Length: 447
Ligand SMILES: NC(=O)c1ccc[n+]([C@@H]2O[C@H](COP(=O)([O-])OP(=O)(O)OC[C@H]3O[C@@H](n4cnc5c(N)ncnc54)[C@H](O)[C@@H]3O)[C@@H](O)[C@H]2O)c1
Image (cartoon, rainbow, N blue to C red; front, side, top):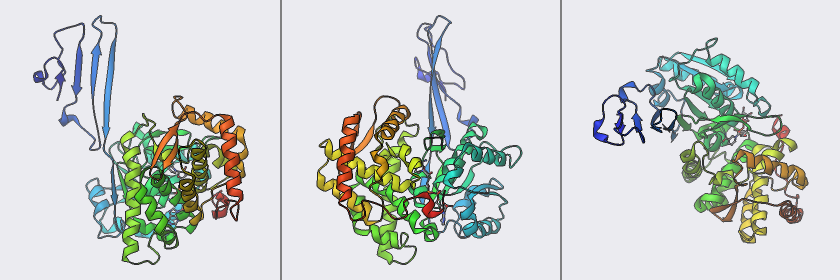
């Protein structure tokens, strides 16, 4: 529908000119019958200055992204994927190579049983593969030399956070915007990187520094995949759950305090556990997802910096690659340090900081690494974060209690040094100095 602001009733299939040439504003709602995408819509406004020399355009882009908990996504009896791909006559899929080894047969059987042709690329997706070269290879598969996907054909992406980042970016670049459906097979991908709009590759020094905002149109979360995940990766993913619990959801925090260890041991009730634990596993996953998407999903283009989910992610993008840490451990170190800094700023009670540190430690996440003492590196991380977050301030989310946070705009080098020193002393008193289990990329063979 097309309307002018001067008389909305003048709508026809075409934009109307207003009577005044000096303040002409035309709102343009594109006719529904011309729409080609079921997920993306848009409208706009064009305002002419009236002197025939300039005008201003404002456009609103609306996208719909759905997130669903499912059980047995590759079970032939589960209609979810078949309903999407059957009418389209094929499925183009990018699958993490390790996931393909474990679940490729089930996936192929699924599409065979629904008589849907499948074109699948198994892609190695190690942290070291998170590069522009990998994105180029994926683009070859998606483009004219490969499957020649259509702009409205959702690509199926199955894997962990590394794959969701690079394959999401490749989809964003193909035809400037090709939709994709994400099946996250790790905890990180299920509750965080998977539904996230932040697709990317790593830059030379900073993680995730090259990318675009392009969320999957549908995220399917099936925790049955966690059964085969290495326990180190379960632990790693739990850091992203804790960040939402600390900053946004006190009930989630209590659930993690009470059941976190059991959820780790049973891979979220997929390796044993009773009905009650199954229900708790679902609730934890749902709460973490909901809390994350409430903030990230409604702010898809990061035009606002009230982003609690950036807790633990202010300094870590600089020290994580330098220390070759697993992402979750680096986030946990960032969260624990952030809690100490919040105490220093009188934002948080020491007892609440201790609850955060104790929860991380209970599940074997690191809370300290000597790289924090490299103040120049930490300041470099802050500088980079300011650029990334728009130069308006540091916007570092720090807890103000369990389930709430605020944003530090300035952290001087003096304050940083004091907070690091106090955090170091606190962690030195811990039996293992705050080390986590399997904290390095090489521990899990991911270098
Ligand atoms: N875009 C975002 O907003 C965002 C958010 C958080 C994390 N990330 C990124 O996500 C990455 C970490 O993701 P991750 O923790 O999922 O790691 P990952 O993608 O490296 O997966 C971990 C390992 O598990 C394997 N694997 C995946 N699913 C499996 C399964 N079901 N069973 C057995 N093995 C399986 C993978 O092949 C890999 O070896 C980091 O690069 C991080 O920067 C991005």
